[in-house]
Amino acid sequence: MDSIIVDLKAKNCKEENFLKAKDLEAKGLTKEAIKYYKLSGTKEAYNNLGGIYAEIEEEYELSLEYYDKSLELDENYATVYSNKASLFYNIDEPEKALQEIQKALELGPDNYIFYYNKFIIVHNYNNNNLIKSLQLGLPIDETLKKTLKEMDYSSLNLSEFQRVKNEN
Image 1 (tube, one colour):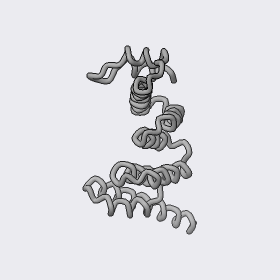
Image 2 (tube, rainbow, N blue to C red; image 1 turned 180 degrees about the vertical axis):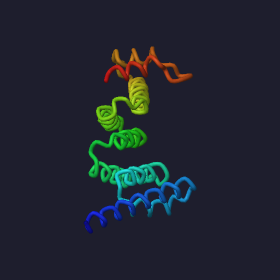
Image 3 (tube, one colour; image 1 turned 90 degrees about the horizontal axis):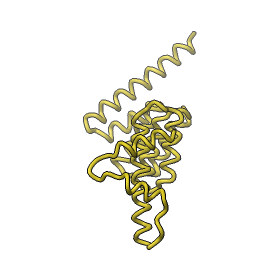
């Protein structure tokens, strides 16, 4: 019975630290929030630390370490895979970004944000390949030609988004 009480107290402490960290982060007190997220040690806390280190601190390696810690606690935490995809996309590693977003979609096939993220990755990846091909004078393959025809630079192209969604 005592071990159950100790486990409950530890769980409550983790949750309290997590909630305190979220509150501090919302108030813009990132450094203080980091301390409480680390004390919490939950998968959500590690995921949020990954986000902080990627977006605010621009410490990408450390960000990946925290995302991986989150996945050690729950390898089926789809949001982390989506966040890792965003990180890889932002540091210009589109192949890794596509792998991570695909894993997120496998685990969370009903999450429209994952489809949106995949759309952005695929859309911009194809666009970047087109630009590189043009710069290098390389022939443009049929996929890139099709993407170029479907692209609408004034807004997100719904038909392209549907195509990406339907591939899954």
